[in-house]
Image (cartoon, rainbow, N blue to C red; front, side, top):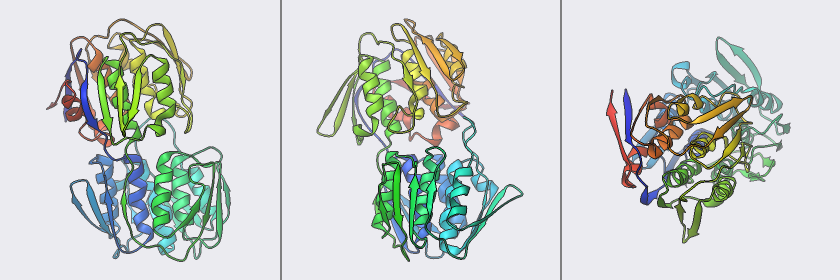
Length: 417
């Protein structure tokens, strides 16, 4: 098992490029199930979750080849309709294959999913939507079994905005007869990216990026070449890395408009952000100001940036309140940040962070994907050495982050335990 060793206190400077979005690439890969033929997906990040998705598609009968950040997927011979527990247990997004398999083959059997232990993320909204489209659903022995002679368009109102549920039902409805309306839909940029690809394939989708998405079903879809959008959470993490070290970093291959909520909060904290010719320059202040945040569905402050922003507030001037409104178990990084000397108190769904002058390097353990990033950020700003174990979480969502940070002047290395 690998671990990271960081000697903190260095200001990050230089240029870094953001990889393709994991959260966009995963449903885009799954969407290839909907049409037989050859796809070419580019700007794909090399991550554990991507490899898991490739294994799932391979098990279903697709043929996959990779060359650099380009992945070619041939779904011509895709004929298996079962995704086993062994394949999907590590990743929640695996459940997304259920609807596309059902739409293409009329039946599917998929294991209930796994993933990060950051709270209950049930798939009831997914199943409710599939039933509304005409599917018969059975839960047996840890598997979801779905059958349908013909899916029919309908009106689906989500109990709450769900990214996975919106993506899942949007894909499935492309081959349903008639019009489907998804109401109270999630609005994330990754959903827009998926809709753009589906429309290139021949789907008729309107309203992606709003809370009402209209899908008019078509008889068939066709394979396409598609480039995955940049990863906004990786971009946001680099922005915080520049801020927490008092650095000066230029970030390329990112779309700043996808991070408005984070940008406003960083600017309120005293961070300078300039966007020129597609390059975003982030300069950390001499002293950070404490800022309150509340995580919300997009376009609100992203829950996937909460842990990183908390690390930043640990050395800000004053006290801040960080409220987590998306996942009920997403403060697991707090106990590890306290090991750096941070002053944090949890009160229900909120964490009160009192800024201190300097964090101290410490041995810490990653508990989930974004918690891993927060510990790296704290280590970069801390005095002395930090050792982070269980970084396999990190490899689910960040492509070679230690190499990118080292390129900015960080003293960070990956070693075998």
